[in-house]
Image (cartoon, helix red, strand yellow):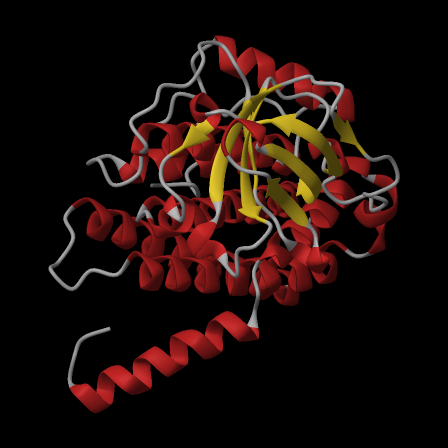
Length: 340
């Protein structure tokens, strides 16, 4: 991975609707055919996600969802439909989520799923549904459905922020969609039990890193057009160092993923990657406006949008909660003498 080396990536979409056009174009050009995680070329997969994030975060969010769905299907021994845009709808925030009701041939998919990116533009969705009598994710079932479907409705006014608006993220209402054996992916619990679940989380961190690098690009472009003072230069260097450290962390993690130790834990790898990139992204968000001042924030729509997108997207990270979990593992590992 080398997200800090500019290699002439494609220009970002200029308008929200251009994101979907760019996504379709990338699909048909084969640009969404990323290597599968943990199969020997994870670094190139994450580098590709990073490059899309550097171009545009809303676009990258849809690319990441598609790539994650394709990886899930392959892990389950299934094949994705050719030339179809996929997404993964698995959130259970605020007590919502997809539900499986009934048994056998009378099983239906229902419920409201929050945070469904590409809600009204995808061709197929992989949905994590919980049987109505189940307790936790260990019993969740993955369902693949074709879109559009009149029983799948993207709810208006469920994304009111400017940040990541072009990702077309909405709550989606599912109404009694029949589910047969052919629509099921893997066994119950497959979604979170597979190693790719945590590797997908690290892939999201690669997108965040690309988004932060995209802000860095704009700040650097701002400074080369004038004579920066020493404080601006110091802030720029601090941003750069955070991105370099994150890049190194992801590169090392990718190598570990493809040649794991016997005690390799994908959850630990994902936690380190996500927390490292989140800290770098937060530093970028804090320092970029201090470097540029109010001019670009108020007059450069693309720059302001990049900041807004990054601030919203990186909050997918659970911050202190994930750090606390990682810290607990470090303490337990020190007590037992087992390497974390």
